[in-house]
Each structure stands twice: as structure tokens, then as C-alpha cells.
Image (cartoon, rainbow, N blue to C red; front, side, top):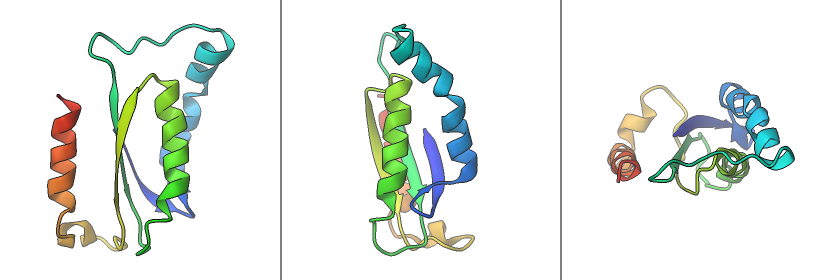
Amino acid sequence: MLASPIFFYSLSAQAKTMVDRCQSFWCEKYRLKKSIPAGPKGRKGLLLIVGGMKKDDGRQGAEIVATAFFRTVSVTEHETLFFGSVDAKGDIGKHPTALKEAYEAGKRLGD
């Protein structure tokens, strides 16, 4: 699971730093041609992003980065949840469906 607010159409600096630190996995997989096993049940991912904007076009940059990260660490499928208009502390709790959707998506990760 990767969760981040969106800043300037991308992941937060902290989330992006974590992704960037996984460059060694990219080198291992694509340069050294070593597989990164996904395990017997495979790997699934969840990208959970929030942003202050009302439109969901701000999610595109974050999704591009997350997709590259997930692919690198052998996550074969992932789901994205984006919630806009979440700009202040406590706003996510006021969203009509966010907590339920996130809960359900988390349950699907265990399936």
C-alpha cells in the first residue's frame, strides 16, 4: 500500500523518497535481469491518494510514479483510490464514502 497527499501533481516528498530508494530493485530486475519473486499468491497493491483539488486530474502524476514503483517490485495489479477536496485536517472524515472505500480496498488486498 502506498498512501500520499498530492503536491504539485505528484506524491509527497516523503513517499517519493521511498519510491526512489527502490531504484536498486529496478536495477536488479531490469539491468541485472534478476527476478523479484511475487510470492505464491502474487502481489497486489493499493495507491491511496488525497488532494485539495476538486478535479481528479491531479492524480495522474502520482499514478504514473506509483505504477512504475509497483511494476518494479513485482506488484502485478493495483487499485487506486483518490479523494479530492481533502485539504484540511479532518476533511477525510467528512468525505461521504472515503473511509468505507478505503476499508473495502484494504480487505481486497487480503483476498
